View: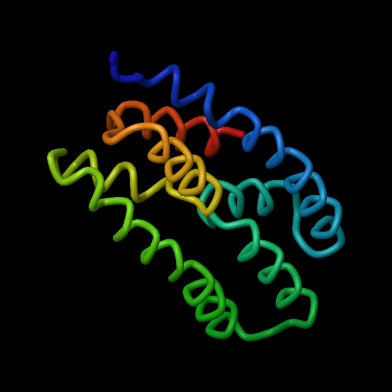
Length: 139
């Protein structure tokens, strides 16, 4: 059976990526009174967890200290570290750089898409996972 590549990973993530659009719009609407569009764009670029972005906006709204915001975002994102550790067990044959790249863009949803793919296959091509992650990140 032919291994699926990058574009099949992009296609696998499409339904999830479309869901990110509605969450992004909701976050933008809620954050509009508290952050500028540029700040929201930077938050979306660097804070790669929707739940952490919502928490940041809530903490900014109550004028919480920066340390409290940073610690909250860190703790929320800690779960992604655990998901990445588990996902890396399926990519032991892959280089360290591929694993770092995959883990850097992993979300709950892309992890779920990966687990769904692994139900049907013994092995997943790292390029498939890059397509899965990159599509979700760009959305």
